[in-house]
Length: 637
Image 1 (cartoon, helix red, strand yellow):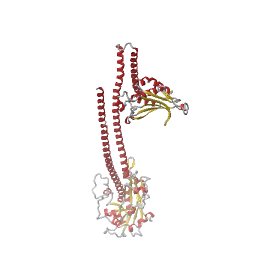
Image 2: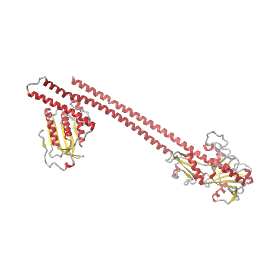
Image 3: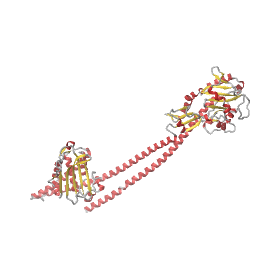
């Protein structure tokens, strides 16, 4: 019943192990599903965040571009408004009075540094009109010959588009045209009464007011200030900005980034004309066109529109009427170009999206690996706990058996049951001695395992003869081998070189391997031990082989035979005694001496364990085995 009860308990333990092994798989599957769901949600969320970021950046860029354009037009409009000519002054040609008025206005003008020279093209026939230049020191206008840089202005009235001529001729509009190639502002004035609008050339009574702008001041002060105001952040420019003449794109008027090349202008994130062209001006500002603009820059140029509190564009140019500036030639308009320094907005957002995805999936991967390690650690802890429980049960049984035999023999001797015959007393003494040795070896094995786990003490190596160690071990185990009915075949090659090893540790290795072979020999009663010189990938070595023709090792147990407390299916089925520590201790001792242990096995046929001990360099040149010499047979075979 005891055997049956033990068998039933063992079967129950196997079923419990199988049931509990399903939980980690279910847990791992659930965690995998959660991680996949999180990955999908994170991918979608990062995609939405990237789209929102792209829209935010593009909206912010468009707003900055429009504000830059509006601020540019505001400053030009202020200059134009401050330069308006009173019709009475134009009729009387009182240019000295006009010069004093200009001087007073220029003192209050924030952008007066943009003005280089001011000219008056007096009314009269176009071919005989005089050109006057403002002398700011004498507060007067002096007649000069036409400068080369203003020659194109003389042909402007004839070659300008009809829409521009209409704008310049409308007495209700303070319309100014900008010639970007000079650059210069031009405005028509007349002393003649207003007449119906037409596209005919200007009458003889029409004159022109010309403001030559300082291109160098625009490049070094005006444009950098606007770019810093609308495109820079705490760490510098958020976007690279350039102002180029549409007719000469290869020579930018201003650029915030010296590396901003013309090739980058093609893939710019934003591009807008700084000035209204003639057609846009006519469609928006002349009678019959809409007076309400659809861009932020239009509001501040419409004084008739009620100003909203807090509107950054709700500022209008001072002076009579409405001051508007447009480009007299749409092919020479100025373009504002903005581009992200790291590429286009789409590429920047895509790069940020890839970076976020990489970081997000990296965190998920790390989380998954952590969970996997947690599951594996839990499984290992459960298996180790189970092995330790089996070890406790096995060691209790192993300790109980010799102790019961010793106590029984001692009781018989103490009670006088054994008397008279010295042979009987000798027999009882042998039993007590053998069981005591068995118990001592078991305790020593456990203590050795515990001490190695605690301190990892390295055995003291010295030059030893392998044959002498084997002879000593076989002498110690002779009675055990013979009493168990085993036949031992030993073969030790002559002339084996000495190895560096701890004699006690090497003896313990052989003790464990021989005891293990005897324990799992099954019905076979044959043991073999051989010592020979061999070669491996590590070099010349001495190989000690311990083999049996017993149960062998199952394939699934082979990877675990050297683990502490592990006992395979053969140990469970045959209820072979043992603690599961012998092979582990043998492997650790061999590794501490620079060697290793390998195993070859066939289930049901037998196993062979080989101890590989390297030959020191000094011994490789000695004790070479002569050709044709046979190994000697051990007399204990």
